Length: 212
Image (cartoon, rainbow, N blue to C red; front, side):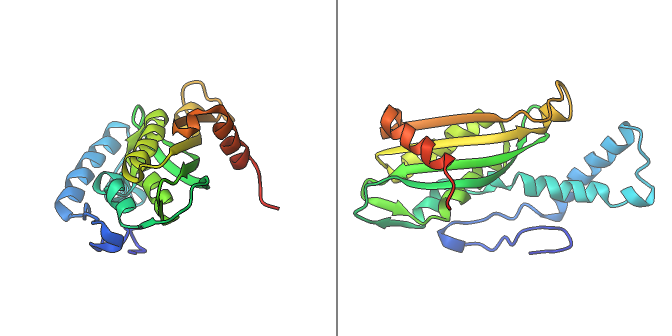
């Protein structure tokens, strides 16, 4: 990890999938030049001390916030699939979500709850949050993000069913527009057994409960 620039380690071949280096100097220079123009157009003086390195910082931040375009969620799941005779619900809940609204390029953030019922194979638990990150680290709408997580798990693991619930606050609603500070958007997507009310209710009850 580059502590100065908050740039992640981009070593290839980790956990069976490849990470692509987006932080090449040419790309950073191109984005920095555009951000420099933005600062000028909004009435700022990009030559003052506090803004001298801001265009480059913005470029690197944007590349980090959108690095999901370079990752393959299916490959992440494929790298840690294990044959296992287990057919009960598996839930990973309270997964932190950080994404950017594609309409205003402002952040939205919250939690994702993901469940699946295995059909001969389970996946390493850490891979579920990684899949969430792959799709959230792109320009998004929450509805599509929910569906993409569901579809990736369903198509890769072929489980008996998948359930995804995402709860997020959107800065495009709280900082601008209607300026509603406490609103939370909840989206859900289901396949297979989770389309049945009994299974879906069990899942919703479990993600609402807290460990003692």
